[in-house]
Image (cartoon, rainbow over the protein chains, first blue to last red):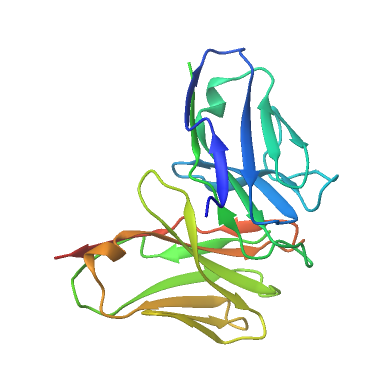
Length: 115
Length: 112
């Protein structure tokens, strides 16, 4: 069972470069999320997609864009990377949205360093 | 704004000991609470999800309780093993229920 798959696992960027983090889930889940995890800040929601065709901002959306490509895939794009975006990024999914996220299933993370 | 606190931040116990991890939240109007485990360099693994209508949820050696009125949840680990060493996080929906708020976690070390 693959669950939630993220690519790439590691990436080093220079300031101003762009990149896209890819996420795919094979559990037929309706909702998908992007979080970042930083020491001392915990996990913070960047964007989420409650269902296919919808996306919404989370707590820290500035500097990011997302695309819900289809039910399986949810990508996160950094248009002009900044050192403050150095972090570990996690994609997650949940079966359905019932007055909020249900049980979350996470990917292994993508470790991004911006120089 | 929902705030989630986990105490202690770190805990070290000998193998075989029973232990309790604590999670407190400020907004008691939640509809569920979730406990996760995170191993170093890995993603989060869901351990238990407690609905607001439940008081307890059990999975193997793990038991989670929820007391909404006091804004508290506990994760009880029975007969701890070195393989239980990890960071344990709890998460609750925010007041708007549009996102989860995570605690900063308790880093557990079980010594052989």
